[in-house]
Length: 76
Image (cartoon, rainbow, N blue to C red):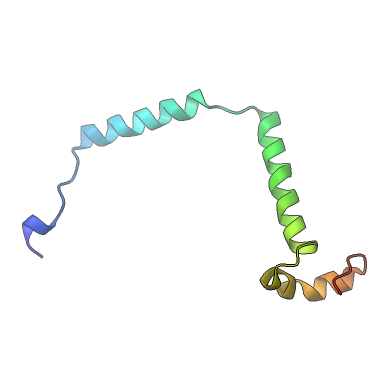
């Protein structure tokens, strides 16, 4: 590989400026514990729905035995 094929690397000070900028953005968009909890509950709900109630063939086939073992979730 020749030197002209290698893209130039940004300077260290430029990288640190970028990192500091990203941290400022992150701090500005801080979410409360309640919001974090709601996001977690929503994510868990989506996962549980996908496991137990969806009819997407790939997901249904993988969890088919679990659905029958629980006996409360009909799939046929």
